[in-house]
Amino acid sequence: MQWIEVTGGQTLQGKIRPATAKNSVLPLLAATLLCEGPCRLCDVPQLRDVDTSLALLHAVGGRAWRCGKDIQTRPATTLNGRIPPELAGAMRGSVFYLAPLLCRAGQVSLPLPGGCHLGPRPVDIHLAGLAAMGAQIETEGERVLLRRNGPLHATDFTLRLPSVGATLTLMMAACLAAGTTILRGVACEPEIEDTAMFLNACGGCITGAGTPVMTIRGQESLHGAMHTPLPDRIAAATYAAGVAVAGGKVCIQHCRPAHFESFLQMLVKTGCEVETGKDQVTVSRDPAWRLRGGAELYTAAYPEFATDTAPLAAAVLLGAHGSSSICDRLFQNRFACAEGFSAMGAETVREGRTLKIAGDAVLRGAEVEAPDLRGGAALVVAALGARGTVRVRDEGHIRRGYAHLAADFSALGADCRETWAK
Ligand code: EPU
Image 1: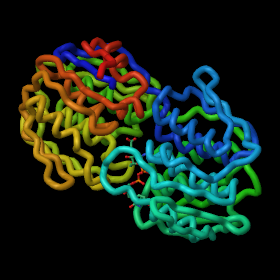
Image 2 (image 1 turned 135 degrees about the horizontal axis):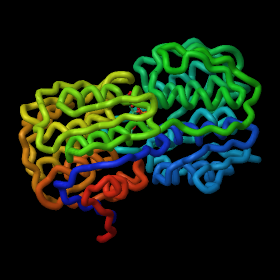
Image 3 (image 1 turned 60 degrees about the vertical axis):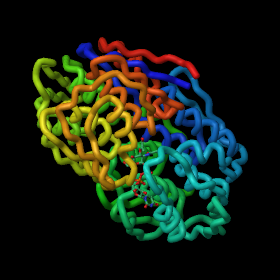
């Protein structure tokens, strides 16, 4: 069992660079299976979800290995479409293998994917879109079986909601489908544009990625390419949240501030200073100032306030002056971290999808449990402002998305360390 131990009260200073984005790396790794040539993904962080994805890729017959900081792939000789349940259950990103395996192996058997317990996470939009391209779909207990007779065909498909995962699935499938597919009502998250850039570098023809309507001209085959995934906007927001809580001044370098602008705007409203450059942002807060609360936040699809940053925003607002509320419109159970906040002395109430935060909390030392990836990170961030030592027990959620969260904050001056114990 991993523990992150934080003794609050130290301000943060310095510079930090976020890793490349987990939520780009996962679809990119799966997308390499679409390619008939070698691929190289550069600067890929050592995350648990990346290891799970590599294990999944190997299990279906793919060839990929780490080369220093990069991941190198070679085209598979034979692919099988059977995704092992223990790997599908370990992360939601297993769903990204659906389209590549259907296209390249002709069939796929996917046990329902796992991931953080954020509430129901159906795959109906992925399946409806693939069915519109000619996939035959059956469900067998907890597995979905997909087959195709001949190549998939193009379609004009409207997503019933802008699902990030379904957009990626259908975009990947359309790259090798016969004809020109139009996808409407798609998600516009930067990770989708990033995956489209990679696929286009492999010979794909995707236009409109990053807008609600995408057009994809199917190709006979794709070759390989080299690609550096974009910087992790949620990791960048995590560091920014840390400065807001602890005080100090930190420059987050090599990031894309526009990708987490809604979060930065929230910080400005609380009274933090935010200086934005082209590829860096400096966040500062005088620890003597009291942050302003009174925020009323609603999460929604990009570019609105991101669901993944909602627990981080909560961590910032716990000690701010005045009450705030955050409603997560995407996931039912986004605020499982509220229990940990309460154990540290914050007053929060969960009402359905909304977290109500009384504000003005003076946090104390406590032993808390990371309920999921972003909730775990939010507990660490909140602890940076606690009077006393907070021990965050983590059965591995945080390492799914942050290679060295404790070391990152410690390098900025926090009294924060990672320990292993039962
Ligand atoms: N949904 C459906 N049917 C579908 C697909 C989605 O009803 O077929 C619903 C979901 O239940 C959810 C909403 O649509 O309520 C949004 O889900 P979406 O498909 O957009 O999310 P996802 O692809 O499962 C990715 C990220 C999440 C991030 C969300 C939203 C990955 C691996 N995961 O999930 O990241 O919160 O988009 O931006 O890319 C994380 O990194 O910790 C994380 C959970």
